[in-house]
Image (cartoon, rainbow, N blue to C red; front, top):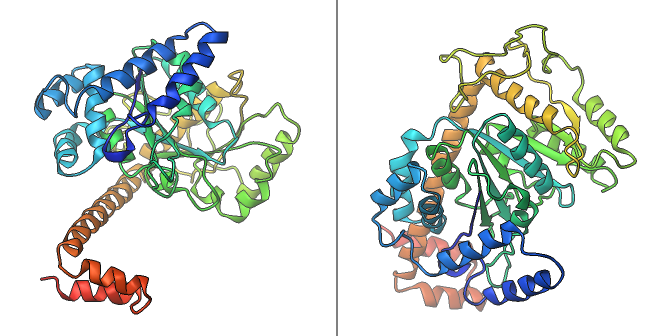
Length: 406
């Protein structure tokens, strides 16, 4: 597994002015513990990312793309660094790889801080690897509002995956983006899908009640909760159940777990459409190629699915620290994927995702162009001064700038 560090602009994670944080952390760890494998990967990744630009040994982007798709993991890490920076160069790379990126299952994993998302992602990845899948993890960490840097602690929690060539973990700084994911998260997922990873797990920043953008980006959305955090009622009030395809009560060995599961199941109503036990209904759970939604995997679900019925969101129990419930969760993810294809909902969801990606790309490009034109207009400093002095409101200043545009 590669522990890739993202870089770009002022947000070089563990960058030059933030790398001093790494030294005391490693020093403290070495004093009390032997060097774990993931530390070696992490340090090597930091050094290699800081000693070169956006290409691998001066390679052109097309050479970098061929190397990444061909299995060169260092080239893939470099390519993702370019993608995270954004701009025309990143867009060109996405253009080249997008036709090859339709085969991955995007699974968004979100929830409040403290629910054990990172440990659960680690368990899901290991279970998927046990079943022979290549897995990529995109872990979004919160950024400092002052420096833009991120500690990338999620990667440390997944250290036991180190050395597995079938797993690739990419940490990203949120860089102030709302909704629990970074602005370039989906572009990174496109590159990973083109590189041949069958399942891409997207772990969000610990989110609040209304920061659930990952539900608009993934084929399957998992909302993780835990007993005793005080978020049970808030989850139902805030409509979190509406965006979840699978609900997981992690830390189920704690008091109150059964009550929370019961409340969530009650809130969901009838259970028609839940995955059937093996041997019932469509035992193979397979869907034809014509019926699969975008990115459906070539393999079948391990459980039967009633494709003619609506999907009723299951509430599962897991204990990520021991792995309890991980196998059932992975089976449920596969069942939901199969249901999307068999029911025809996959095509509708793929279209909805495509619409959101196009609109989000338009908004980002429009914002960059608007800022460029505003600063080059000759009125920028004068209008900002007027807003600061409260002689002009921000909307009025914007109107004046727009009035000067062709």
